[in-house]
Length: 180
Image (tube, rainbow, N blue to C red; front, side, top):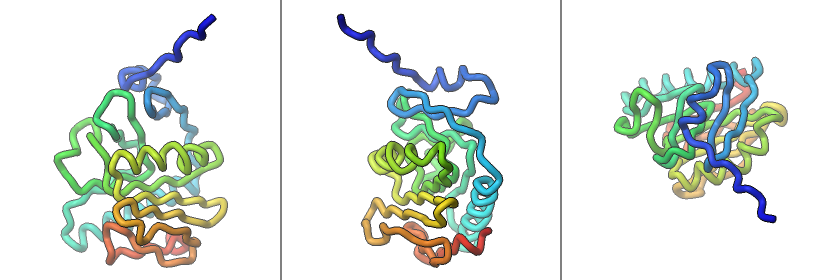
């Protein structure tokens, strides 16, 4: 006897969830997300301020959005994520609902409940969708994985005490320990 096919969910299903229910949709599958802890929120706030201030000081056109901010990665109805930080340089991708397409730079601050998603599924999805730069920040281990999807030149593992240069903003250097 054949198993019934798994149900594929859409963005309409995400919007039908109760207001306090946080979830993401990847390839038609819903992934629940837990509320972030204080360290997570502190890092997201500091990244938003640091990156935003840098862009403003250079009179740049990119915009920084902290979660919750909807990103419709593949311009379809089966992929909806809320990266912790989204940096979007193409203003035509931004509308009243979020970002339609891949952000230029995504930062995810992991927790034990998101580690598998951030290092696995999202790494693949972000790269294949056209994200140029992806940082995975691991506060428990004090490390940052930086992925330079355009050139692979700066793809490597960093410590929180290292000066980490952005791939899309060569003159932006962030030392995570200074943010704490």
